[in-house]
Image (cartoon, rainbow, N blue to C red; front, side, top):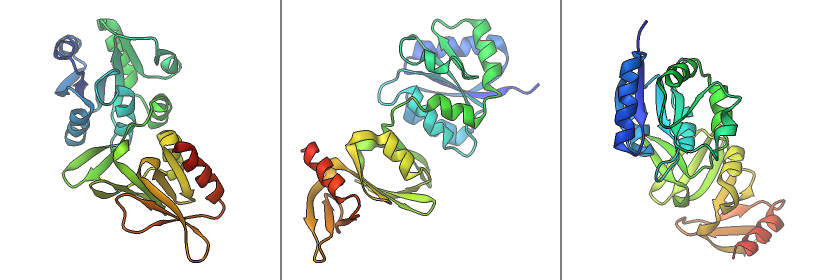
Length: 244
């Protein structure tokens, strides 16, 4: 039987070393790379296309739970086995899912069983598993790989057919996430001003009336104001007033 290609992700080097030693004893996987944070892990996954990722839950910057969501957007998403020293937050969310959620210190027999289960994890199960993670980043596909964009750098998101244009401080990128899903995941910091437009409240400069009486929203970092739909105008005005 061929070995599964694996990546080990943990911000603590001793934890990575112990996990790699246990995996070597099991003989089920080949560790192709390791990473100390989410950005490194995402880059490694794009480059190496692993079968399985062993992922710490608590890491600086982006949690393992959110990273798992970004991994789901890859062309060939890996199965994920979570490792953590804490059970008070997410353990209940995984009890009914066919995925590994292992408490440190890791035990060899549970690691072996989780590896077998994770090798059969399908995308629908992964989506249910990662839906509890709050969105703090978007993953942007670029020529040289994938970039993680912090949510606070987003100016607005504009949907056009099956793509969404992300306008941010460094330019624009296209993503395939739905605007409705993004609205739910990004939370109160963003407000919908049109059926196809979601804006970051932090970039709002003014809400004005146009020549024909329509509302126009001016955003810092954009040359032209954005139209606010008549249906949402009152709701947008209330939301922006409440945010000030």
